[in-house]
Length: 224
Image 1 (cartoon, rainbow, N blue to C red):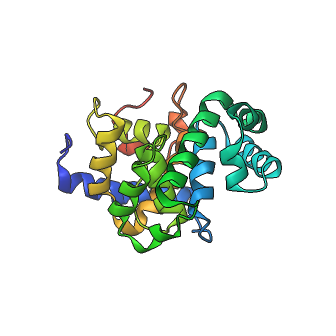
Image 2 (image 1 turned 60 degrees about the horizontal axis):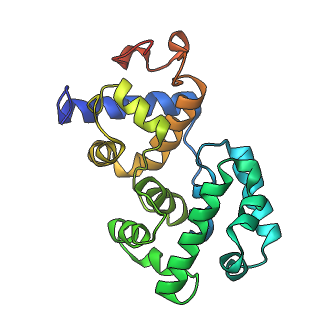
């Protein structure tokens, strides 16, 4: 599975989780939000920071009073509302596609039925909508539905490779599959958020702060 073998990799993952929780704490599992709200917020979070993501979502909900009104609006109006979050034209198109797909399939915008599905079935239902990718689906299942899955974003993907948990050539999709086998279900929420925090603050894509890293003894690519 990995260069160090599945059992050793699982042991290593548990040690990494322990060190990250010691450094950043155990993230609080917030009250579950509406699944469609979580889906749109996840789209807006791409290639931006949390502050701009939240501003973009706030602007979006202030501009459109309902999902139906957003569904009916021109893409350019949605793009104008979410401009602060970056990639507005791409994200507005994706939001329109998702709303149209959900309305066409369900007849409304209610995704509460997902709570009654097993995690994999909930993911499958979300992935059936054009514009929803694997990471986005898993984020909704983890954060909105409160089910234990492990999303892999840019930071998690990078750190998983640097730490030797997945092969160097693993794709994002392969890393989703491989890490899901290594991370204890009850720690998927904590590990995802703490890896994300560590990737932003210390193990950056460029100029990683290796001397300050609590994982340096476990890292296979110091300085990479």
